[in-house]
Image (cartoon, rainbow, N blue to C red; front, side, top):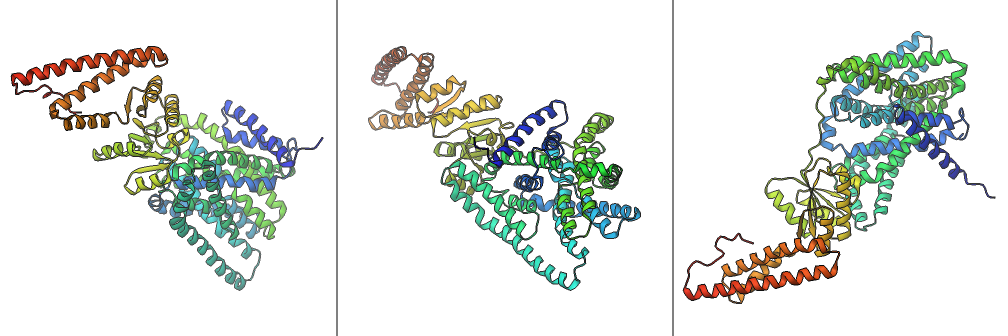
Length: 613
């Protein structure tokens, strides 16, 4: 019997551990992150030993953080990012420099060499972007003042990681002149790469995505989205920059693109899985041997790290304007160690700035703080936040993005007329369409438009279906129309539906699904053409309008009579014949009455008070 390949065996182990640990952790109220960490410990070298190549897994799993930063960048338009420049560079630098200075002072006082104390302080000053943003997202705190402040500080930390790594060769004793020459060349490369990403994002990304979208192959668009993020991450890695920072820049450049929602919905599942794998890798990377050899030192480092960072972060939370009720969670999320500390300490050990033993101790301490953070967060929820019950009134209302009251699925001839009519009345609408040319044209005319298939639940949700009032189902394909209706009925029952029916079977199928506001796409225009034909044949405009109105009213009544029998062909045909006979008899009587009136010379013709078709 052949043995299963290693990648298949490892995939089985990771997925089985996650499927068991995460639901169990959430069931007992500990959250998903702690479940992933516990699963990593269980299958790692210090658990059952099922996985040993922890470092390789950690490097691969860091791509989950990269995808997360890309998706966050998609939510930040350049104008919003520019408005955050002060909190990013102001409060971000205050947090990093303040925490690093305090940790450095304590390290030197404890007897450590100044180089070791400085590297430890800089690495420990960073926080876990993955855990912090995951928690903020789960608690819907990103739109709050603490969420915005936390995001700004985390973004600055990603930027600050670059000079921290550049500092390590200098601390290792490299010559100043050589370092200065290499540093200048490196700075030019960095600026060139960042400039290339910005310029390419502005000029090339959107046309490229439009060209790919024209292929109408959803899996290729997903592959293109992954290729975009992987390529930018690889480019940033080549010049020694943060992969997450490059992905974030690319996301910001596409934040105003019509493909924004499709990119989000395509990448979200990959982000969730890779982030879970990242947390599992962190759990596997905890070196329990170091912890067992120096439990006292490990406990001291963990306690001092959390306490000293908490003092600095709590002290700047007040001037930042963060309400008192939000400060405990804000402080804890930034007080823990961060995943980038692993890179800093490993690079420092490789450059012989710190010893391997110290690096293992610091990496273990960071991993322990990341493990303790969800537990401490749970304790804050149950023991601390109830004391702020009155203070919760200070919480600002969430700044929700403005959601259009109307979503139009399908922007062909039918949907365009509805959109233009709403626009003339000053009513905003969000357009969903899977035709790249149509998306580009609608966007050129100022519509809020997203490229994507409206039969996807995630796209409907990100387009605002939970808060919109009306969804206009105007797609051409009948099957697609019915799938959209089924999806909305199941997940958004309060959303009103206005649907386009292509023919009678489609009308019946929509009515079967409880859609009462259905319009046949050619019915009204055909009535107008019929009126025109009658006028050409000699009928007065009043007579033609009256006949059209009679036919319209009768036709709608006939449809209602036919609907209960639309699955019984024989009975439906009988109803149609009966209705046709009644209409012919009614119109014959009206023609006789009109002829009699003309002979009497009545000036007032019937139909003056009839509404226009």
